[in-house]
Image 1: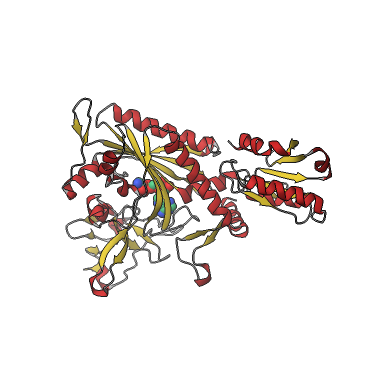
Image 2: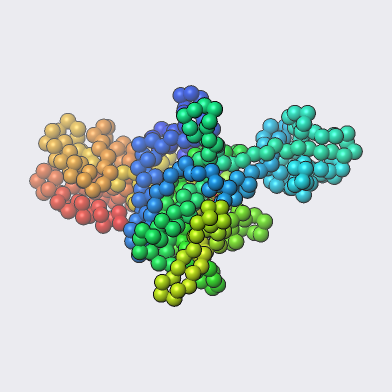
Length: 471
Ligand code: GAP
């Protein structure tokens, strides 16, 4: 049933122009997606309301847009060159590659030799392959993988792997510099902490927001856009005084802020929950971390993360760059390296969860019950009959006028029922029909997607009416 739901959503996204497989005409490129005309509108809406709520409407926040290509020292300082490295082994049956910790093999890993060492295969016991339904058995890809594999003592060399995507910068082929496409958008903010302090009037506590692309060499991209290799993130680094209970207060504040934000943006509350990261599961930079999870068709899955990063990033950049990252409180004279409470969400992942949550079928018809703020088109305009120029003229004028404020769809094909169905399927919350009565009373019929109720509204009031409904 749930796989079926994902199949339906993937098909709808392709058919109606939300999301297409990346590089499709060349056989695709794993873990990449292209956003079509409806998808880009929806994604822009998510980013727009996010930015409005966290930057425009607040007094303690500014935004930046940092470069994607950063000096490679940034990634050494941030710990990603070391910590984004994983060790992988391959399953003989399904050929899937899995991290050794995913298989519970990390206890056999010797960091000095970088080898998995165990006495015999029996010592391993049965390991279930995450590829599903079978026992995991090592596939020894090269001779070097099995070192001394007389069964008395087995040593296996896992394959080293780094999630950062390398790129080579420079014009001369033999003098290219290795850089990394950013694995998280976060570091572009931290390295500009001083610039923002010096060029604006921010005072702690304050946040720096950013939206932009990130890239990861994901081992197993999948579940549509859920885990991609190229994706967008929306993040806040919120800098606070490095002390208790200040840090706990802000950590709780942002957790609740985001839970409410997603619920107010239309995600059903029962499909959201917090999931704290246990010790040992946290990213290398996090003191404490929580995910907001979504009840996806394949189970509870990370929607976004709230991370108490302490002073990890600023201290490391201070150490690696030799530049002070300290904040001076000009009222008290105190100087300190602030703590950072981070909020980090994926745009593509959010768009997917909005689509899944909004998907419904009624009497065999699809209705995407997206919040009007998120919907690609806010309104569609139809002349009742396409072959009546007097109706088309009025409808087209309304269409042109509303376009100044909203994304508006135009449809004059087929009958009204078919047009409603077509707009319901892409989540357009309102449809306006110009009929013969409109020519006399200068009113139109506005039909609501979710209730299917219709009301007559004066043409001159349409813009205000729609603003009221959407916001
Ligand atoms: N700066 C912290 C950070 O990047 P993360 O938990 O690795 O933390 C944050 O990522 C969010 O970015 C995730 O909750 C998810 O929404 C999104 N994200 C991460 N990896 C992703 C991927 N491969 N594809 C799509 N979205 C991803």
